[in-house]
Image (cartoon, rainbow, N blue to C red; front, side):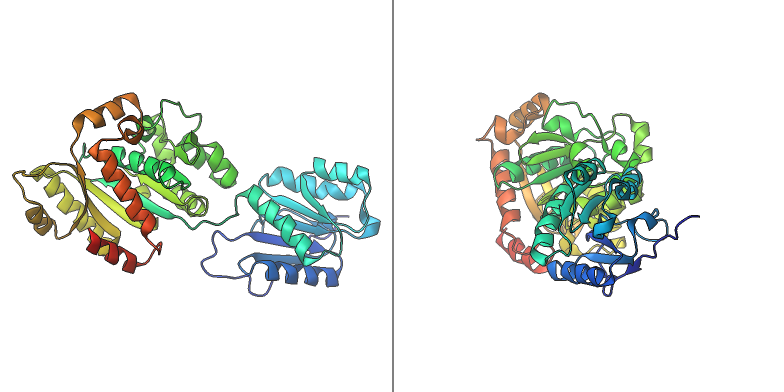
Length: 411
């Protein structure tokens, strides 16, 4: 006769709004008092944790088909239960949910039990009943392993071309490099140009083993470890998630994949820099919905101005606030035919940054796949990027409009 499946109940306060990235923990114990004590300890450790509980034995655990899959499963064993067979349910769940972490609580256990627990994929074996500080330390180790600690709440910056050939990819890659090297920030560069992305080539000659389409294909097992392993490390603090090699594979990347990816990445990096190309589609718009700042890159020529106006009109139709979208003039030379004031009047927006024209240095950087700051430190482009980097680092608030307004006054 089959054992009844445990009924998993969300603890009081577990239905928190805005907690898509919160750690989910399910606690299982046959001891009602232990169960309540563990739940209380977890809530005391971190109020953002989403806790569910089930009173019963681990042998009654089934798949989480009718409840959210937890990131961590805490199982409290009674002394008489701690034999090897009791770990079989955890081993089975580990195969079904390879990214789930297990914490076992037990007041008596043998060396053989510890070995079997390791083989079953258990990360921590703690005494039962457990005290809050012991549980806190174990949970911190698990959070770090799963990529939930520390939570960074980083900024997401997007670069979009007003017209092809603007140099948006060059700026995205090199600003990401400046943030990682000059300011020692943990930075991710995501190439969201799904058909013809080549952002990695601006920083390195490494060939990616996996790309964005591979991550999308495995989105059901997306976590910090999978994301990190899917990226190319081009420096101690800078990693790049490359665009699909085959343009046809870009069709596998859906808006919901971008949504999950950016929710995770914001908590793993100080800055996430997106190169979105110039085509607006469901994937691009989903990405832009997440970002803190959009940098629309153009040059001061009539074709760029015309397409820039169209792009800004689209952003207005999407109800993006003015302090989210910023104009970046690339390859700027003083004394041109079109004055900056005329451009701003035509577009109905102020220019945030100008990047000077230094063709020789930029061309050498692109052709060699070496960041311009590394190749030509004295280039005016390098100086402009470093100033931009410092401007971003100075901002005290990551999302508010007030700091943007203050800094715009300094420009």
